[in-house]
Image (cartoon, rainbow, N blue to C red; front, side):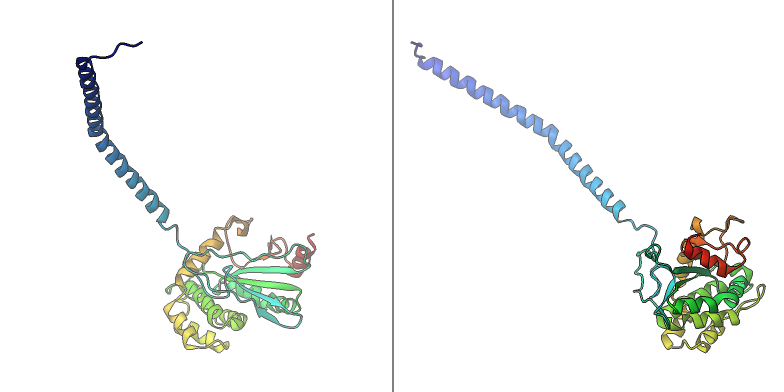
Length: 285
């Protein structure tokens, strides 16, 4: 049997246990004195890191300025029902929202025509004169679709202030406020086109040909004179001119008019007959 402790032994044992507990408590206190500043620093650093992440995450990426109604792809789209061509309506792009490329079913037997035009471009005027009637007929008949992208690349060809950009803004204004008149206004723009090397047209003169083509409202006129879609014109032009698929292979540069049918870019230098090009694009040959 274990020997019974004496009173003195029990007291000594209790004192030793108390001493060990005191030393353990003091060690914890010393450790806390070291750890508290470290923990505080870590917490601060953690909060700082969190703030940095949040700030970085919320720094706006290059902004998309938004755009006019009926130009969700940066272009205005026409489809036909067999007798009449009409605009496919789309909501205006909000600020920060990217344009959405138009998609079609493969091998649907139609010619999906996309044009990139500058209303101050003489070559665009020539293309319009030669082929607009033919294109409009096959679109109305439901045999083709037409998507027109107005852009601005010829400001420097005129001595006035940003004639090309201001006409592209007018195109966006028509798409916004009177889309059914867009092609009529485009024809009027080419008819009123100023000669390169001159000052170009004033906003009042641009408004005049727009109104003369049947597109007229206070909101539309204000849109033209205030250049409501100025930022959109710059952004849409940049998107088009930086698209490698739209570059002229003979020059390595973007030019107008650029015409694409079913994903195939028309090269007027090698394919002089646009009608034949249309047929080959539809047939896939």
